[in-house]
Image 1 (cartoon, rainbow, N blue to C red):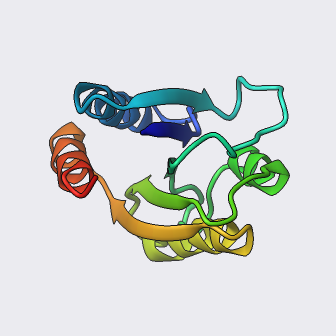
Image 2: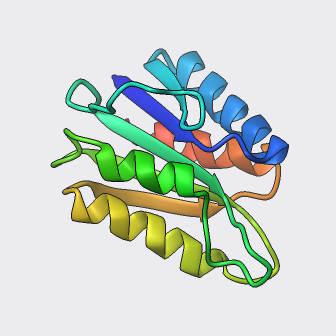
Image 3: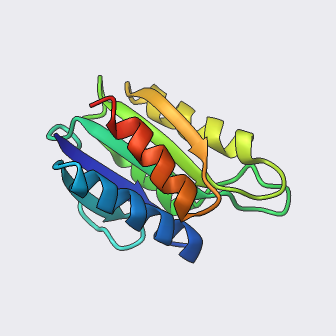
Length: 137
């Protein structure tokens, strides 16, 4: 299965979590493309992928926000219609649910089906989350 792992590399913690999920997907025998939204310049097209992971840190003093680079990237994205997607965020004291819902809403307005979402605190939780998801496929 072709998988895309999209994330904002603003947070080292999120980068470690994304790397753990990436290694789990590869270990399960799936092809995965890692996309850091701050480092990519090409127009995003997801027609070739079956599953899309989207990761983000929660920003702002009260939370509820996520990186503008990720929002812009998802806004430009094409080919999300009918695709299964997964959202994960790294926690903050407040606003985790609000940020997660905003990302999910952006994906759903593009036609994607969000099949799972989670707030992940560390790489151990990332491994559990990834294994649980990949056992479905």
